[in-house]
Every structure is written in structure tokens, then in C-alpha cells.
Length: 225
Length: 238
Image (tube, rainbow over all chains, first blue to last red; front, side, top):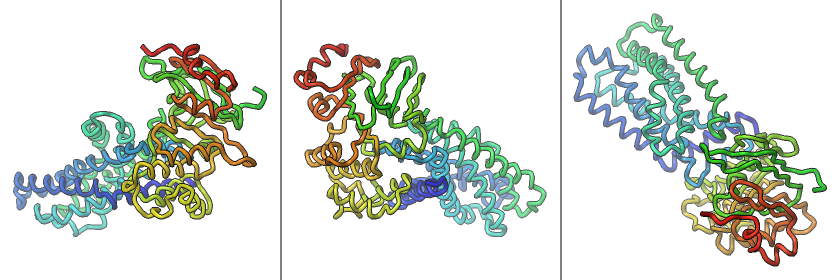
């Protein structure tokens, strides 16, 4: 089977299971709402300082909720040991990784899009002004976070404390991608020209490319040992 | 062994930390042979079967299928595995489960093949129900369909009859035996049930604490007194 067809089959399977169970979206969205609400009590929504840190607040919420979703990615395969079925099937580990990363990224992006209007109301931020740019930043930031998270989700799938281990492993490595996403999002929310911040966008592209290639190369060892 | 071996293990060791689960295993399995892999708990049967199923790599040594590494997609396309677990997705229907695996195995005209296997396993009427709503026996039969529907040349069966109900066990026995005239499969069967294993096997290997303690053809003598196998070749577990 072609690599891309296998990738797509695995991504669609994960999305179909999520559509039936809603175990990731319901929990992660509820969690994101609670964090957004708690932050809104802490920071003055009308203050300039809040506007200046709005990108950081938003990506904190995305990354916290994202780890909940990523935890389930390979954990879902442990029921009935379906991971063994995937590993012994005639598809490369890279296709398994890419299919799972694709499904995770789409789920996280859907979660982030659902959070944006709530964020706009709580923090008085006009997020729709440069929506095209914002969508690009969210897609790139989410992909970087997802590829790292998907590799570590595979690595920690049989670890007893995986819910704790995953964020401990993912957050330090994704710092460059999160920094770039925070910076670009803040610029977009404050209405400053994004042209001056292209270095962050290039960093985000570079991070995504490097960690996607690393994930593709390493996942076979992670899955089979 | 006269025929060129289909599967060949050379000097295979497997470590879990400092513990050696397999120790210097040399094993050849001929095409169309049915090898019963016997041994007490912890002898290394499942570890060896997982390696043959390309689920884990040897720490030392190598296992090949006609010179090909077991992680090759070509080898994995030719194996069918029945494990302790059923390897099916509870949230997907019976049809969707088989559709998904048909996609991974690159099966052409999958719809026809899937319908045939749902008929064979008696699941045709419930094909659109999620597997989580199935009874234990139905789930086992779906697992059998998942393992067989891509027509594997090599079957790797880890305690296949242990958790099966009568209907599923009968179905599996029939599929393993295969009607005469059809090419025989190569089967590696791990089990504690000596009578069952010796009834099916052409070859026998006894593992004891990670080593091959006995390897030979399944003879009348073995079938007459299967209990002697463990007495002779396997030390009791402490």
C-alpha cells in the first residue's frame, strides 16, 4: 500500500474513532474553557498589558489542552493491543506516525478554532482582523507541537505515569515553536505589522521541518525497539 | 530438514534489562510445517512469537524469512497473527475494522473478501454494529477474520484456543487444518495445551528458560505420552 494511502487510512481511522467517542475533544475543550475562565479572573481584560501577553495566554491554553489530546493518541491503541496490529501490518512506522500526527493536528486545530471566540470575548481581543495570518501561525505552531507530542506519545504509551511524562518531555523541546507562535500571535492581536517578525515565522517553518523529519526517522525504533 | 527453511533464527538473544528471555536460539522452520512451540510459563514462547510477528527485534542474532528481514513489508504482508489480545477497534464496526486492515494490507476488491469473511465468521448480520457491542465470542470471531482475511502464508498463533468459545475454537481449527487440495500454510503455534498442539503439529520445539531444549518431528511416541516432554526437557518453574 502506498505510503500516503496508509497515512490517510490511519488518520481517518483515528478521526472516525474520535467522532464516535469524543473522548479527546470533549475533555480538552472543557479543560481549555476552564483555564481561559481562570486566566480571565487573574488578568484585567481591558488592560494593555493583558493585550501584550494575549498570545502567550492563548498558547498556554492550547498547549495544556493539547497534551491531553496527545496523551490519548497512542494510548487509544492499547485497548485490545491494536498497536501490535498496526506495527505488524505491512506499512512503515513513518506512515503510522504521520497518520497519527495528521489526525492529532486536525483535532487540535479544531479545538483551537473553537477556543478563539471564547478567548476574544474574555480578553477583548479582535482575533478575526488578520485571520489568514493567525490561521497560518496556528497551523504551523500546532504542527510543531503535534509532531513532537506524537513521537513522545508513542514512546510513553506503555509508561505507567504517561499523563505526567508526556508534558515533561514535550514542553522543553517545543519551546522554540511555542516562543515563535506566542510572538507572532501577540503581534497579530496587537495589530502590529507582521512583516517585521518574519524571523519567527521562518523559525516555525524550520522547527516543523526538522522535527517532522526526525519523527519520520525515529518512529520505527520507538515502535519496534 | 530437507526443504529450504522459510524462517531461520540464528543465535537469537532477547534481553529485557539484564534478564535474558531468549538465549542463543537457533531454529529453522520449513515451508508448510506446523511447529508447536511448547514450554512452561516464562520459557520465552511469546517473546519468540512476537519477534516472528515483527513486533520486536532480537537483542543479538538475526531472524530472517528466506533471507529477508522480518520488518520488511513483504514479510509482514504474508503473516497472520492471533495473539492473547484481539487487535480490533471497539469503536469501529465489524465492517470498518476489516475495511481499515484491508487498506493497510493493500487488498484489492476488499469489499468482496470482507463479505466472505463476515459470512464465514457468522458476523454478516451484525457487520454495521460497533465491536464494543459484540459478545466475547463474536469479538473473537472478528479477530479470527482480521487475522485470516488477507490469506496469510504464515500463521503465528499465541495460545490461540485459550480464550475461545466452542464456536470460535471450531472455526479456528477448521481454518488451520484447511481443506485438502489447498496449499498448506506454515504455522507456528505456542500453547500450553499439549494434546491440542500435538494433534496439529508436524514439528515440536520445547523452550526451557529461553533455550531450545528439544527440537524434532512430532512422532507417535510424543503423542502417546505428551506429559513426558516437559518431564524430559523442561525444569519446573521455581
